[in-house]
Image (tube, rainbow, N blue to C red; front, side, top):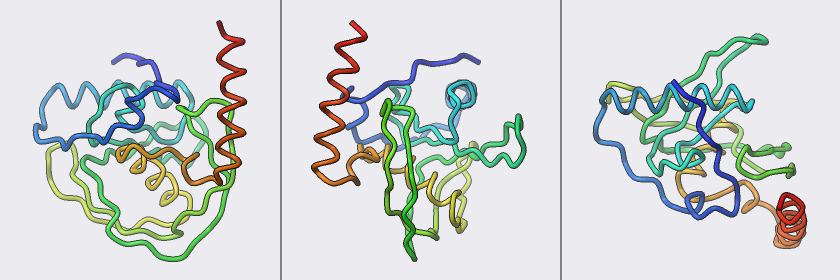
Length: 169
């Protein structure tokens, strides 16, 4: 188990479409453990593999209900096959530094995926749980939450990010 570096925008791996996972082995289990350690250290409520530089179709979603609890769901090769309703709420992202804004997402979704052994998973998710899954599945498609913002807000964020990055040098 190890804490991995979280890749931040504008790194190209975040725009890469993730590859389907076909081998369910010890390497995958190690990757999941590393992702869990990284997500909770950040701290975050979800993490896609490409956020740590691994362009594979794997996400972790926090399901904890109590402070300090670490209960997460592993979704391998997830797909959102249906969505209904709409809700606008504020989002942020571990890979998009210093940016929070309101994003419209489905309120309820139907998800198909595989578990750690490659067995099929199928379930419905609502509200916060659905929002996190949608956000993380977007990562696997090379989409960031800022892509859901208006072009003006994206432009303003890019200017802000240039200043942040310049000050870090």
